[in-house]
Image (cartoon, rainbow over all chains, first blue to last red; front, side):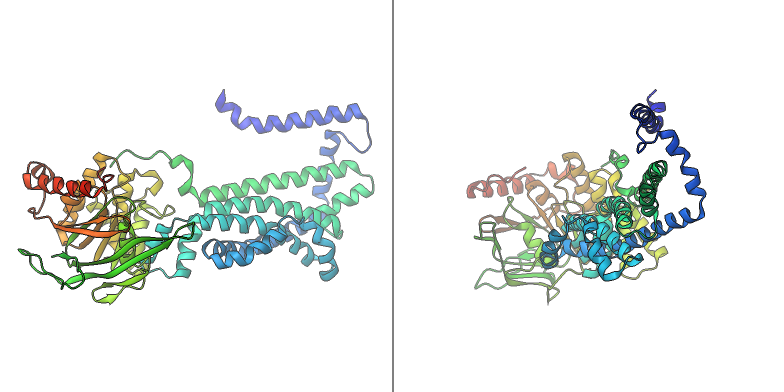
Length: 258
Length: 281
């Protein structure tokens, strides 16, 4: 029973949600709230339309670039902050200042400076992803056992080598937790950036359809973006598990041997 | 073989009945002062002078808070003393080095590396070829009784096994001095006894210099040539006792040996008399 229930649970949850949606929509009879069935029917035309696909791929490309750049910048910075008090003292107030600002709120200014093209949108994604990754890298690096670093030092590792070869792997589980949050934020900032700078992308399709009153397309896009989020997160989780298999809880049962 | 406390106005003496050994570690008037959270000065170590001869097994014994681990960290180069100097083979210690290998109570293994990867780490860092490093690591793992566990991750091992890996990892890069910081402190009594026996067996093979921090009187007497007794607040050396028991030592023989028992009782009495009575565990 239990073994069968587990893989089926998410499927049942989705079906339940769609059913509730279907009945709510039929009951409300509102034009701006299409039924689940109509929305699902609107998905294939979007996914077979060349222009829509180009838009969605452009979104994903910006997201990938913004995400990658953010990791390349944030992980080293977070690790340095975690191991060097002066670096942390310098960057912490700056980050605390930026942290609560919704990154999409910076979009109009960024557009003013950099235009409505890829650069602005990628920059907003970069900003959205950076902070959680910096924060988790910082916390991860701070928690690295001093004695582990001493052991490395006694083996002749220089301070930069210790950062790269001890702090980085030791903090990896925490860093990847930050990356996972960052990935979802990348998706969110990607859509919001396209909502503000309407030129191309998945968000653009969504808001154009909204303007034209094509509500089934709007909801279809919401489903597509949601599905992209689920797939990206699941793919990331597989990579994460593999990278930190040495720290996974299935190993928590130690062997009995002195 | 010998440790000699150098007191002001006294030359480093050689204990009677023992062969003089070249000093390998010289600690000269070392003091360590920490700032506490309330911004007061806390003297962890006060004017410590100690010489450790090459090949000696020396224990530093004292109650918690007497600064015995700090002294070990100073020799390791992980902590710089507030005043005084520590020397390794005549050269002032300015930082960690492969000539001094630490083994910590917390094991401090690299959890992302397998058992074999942990032991190979030091030799690889020194530029040894991977195949050769792996062979060396396997030999050392066999020595500490862990053949067959090469592919395990530290998380899959018990405390005793982790400490065996940590010892093999440190031995792998060939330090001249082993710095052991309460290595068996986190282990249960049975495991602890087994590791003490195995450590002595390993030590008998090449008689590396060992500086061993512990708060267990039995452990110190069983393992050591010398026991350096420390007292706390501030951390000072109060006595250095030669343990004149035959080697190789066997636990069952020693337990029947009145000399062994006499050392233990004598040391415990000295700690009791000083009011440092939290000592025996």
